[in-house]
Image (cartoon, rainbow, N blue to C red; front, side, top):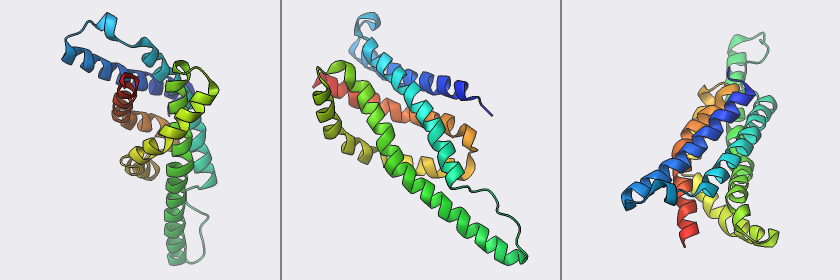
Length: 188
């Protein structure tokens, strides 16, 4: 099992690499100079976001697994009754985890993303709040296009200690989208 610290480091590196990938592709297509064109503030924002989201994600996945365990219950006297109960409980807990993850979890993680990628670029907390309010729901709606399937697979087949890292790997592609989304917003 990966250590807590290694998960945070790997998640941060993947998030930062996604941002640099998008910026590098943009520089390459525009025949620009890499040194002059890389937005290092954006790289730093994604790195900070990676640390914070990985820490939150580690605790979030452990909370979901502790609160809605999908491990096997104590054996019952009647084997078929036990199997039926185990299946119902298993799928109910998967459903609850998925719903919580795609509502509260999505709101929490996307809020962190918007704050991390906006705070250094606005002049006041009020402006940050306005930006958060303006951007959170479109971002969550976009997230719902890929994350429910990724989360379901994570809950079904990935041990809890690996879930943040697996999410970070799926998130590499998602963070490329977020980098494009953020850079487009900054250019507008």
